[in-house]
Length: 144
Image (cartoon, rainbow, N blue to C red):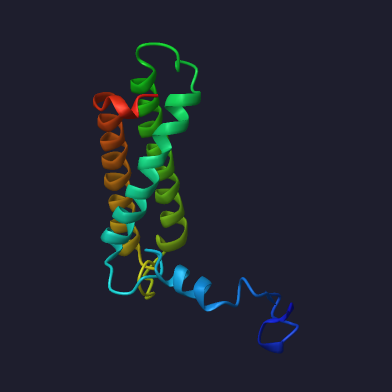
């Protein structure tokens, strides 16, 4: 079952039934980072929406203010703080990778595209964290 990828032992990748299946390839092609036809802004927005929505839960449920009246608000503000840190990390990566001279890459491999991606990530993550905060604070079924 397990053999070198394309029968080349020097590639450094093993072809297993999981990594070589068409289901795995189809799933990976559907991720926003690899999907064709998306602008860098929409890629960042979609990735940010997914991440911002689930980041609020651990902060609100496991944070130090979880048993207080402002536990959910503290979780939301902590989530926004983490999103700022992640966006700063994306900024540093973009400056280190694409800031030197002219880059002629495609998709996310130029400074302008990376800046659009980063902006979309920030807006999407903050927006979905805010949506999760509103849902958790106003709908009684979703109370923590």
